[in-house]
Length: 470
Image 1: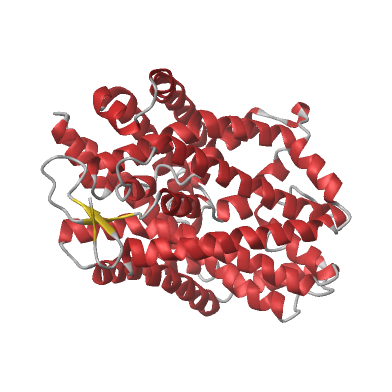
Image 2: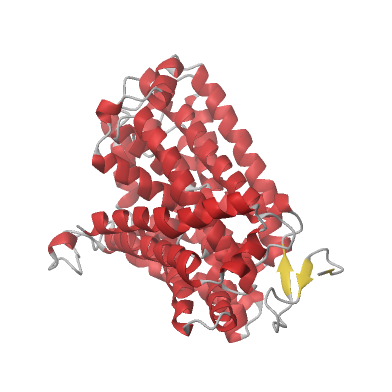
């Protein structure tokens, strides 16, 4: 490994025979911030609170934490390990490991599935990120102050009904993502997360402090941390399992891509556990920031996907300094979505750089513009194409718009399929000796991880996969 004059590290590939010169994270902290930035996103601040509300609170949270330990951490370790072992983009990393261990070359398709999943997710994730960008101005201008529930709902419905407005904010969000990715690992990704992640934590702590003054903090904390197992259903358990998988950016090749930039000597296990703990902590803090405000205003915690863009704006509109803290909250949401968007674009850009020989800027422009264009279909499905259901002839997909289909296929098929394939590859196919060398764990710790990723994790992921399809 050597250090260039610009300060970014390079090395000659993780596997012997690789001649690629690639950037590396400058430190363990840089990787943790980047991986945490990928994991912390709309899933923590938008989805986790509302699915917790829908599934009864504390018991659901407890099961979610268990699923993080049993499913999330083992697969994250496997993905980072594959990335560092291969030392290239997700497709080529799996291809090189397969060649080295004399495995079937078809295993490289696991990387391709992940890249495709991340690319499709970003196309509509950017649209939702655009909603957050729009709501900063809405909150800052005082439009939420003193409004009724119907008026707040009309603001959100009005936003969704305007394709040109949605296109503007979708374009702004995608441009923010592309600017960072185009600058590369050291000057782009690392520098961005070094600034954005501490800012995100500060904003979140300010929001928790604000929630403590709302009058509903004790009730919100009790809802989040006092388990009532009578409210936990089989569906809730499977939702917890699925979200534990989704929230850590697993199955979408992100951690393989980020792992390919991880220097030797940095513990994969310690960094994966740290990232998982921080990500979970952010989700819990988001709950502490949101539920007290909801309860203080007599609103419903199980409000579903509208919790962030309808229920919370209603609460902020009724509270002292609501415009200021509402604005702050949506800035926080943008930061979370931005760091995740960066990680979703990175694997396809890395692939274009290495597979097609394009420079960083051109590969980012091509990937970003194609993803932006696909996002237009999601925008139109919210208004002009709202009655277009391309696969409506299939019973389980009846009534699903393009936006719904992209969400369904990525969350319920591609991500679990990719994660299951990674678990099988690590647990049953890849050389055990190579894994022991990469993970550098004590014998008991490696055995625990190996048994988990070999037996427990695949069964859990397969269960969610089958349940979602049925």
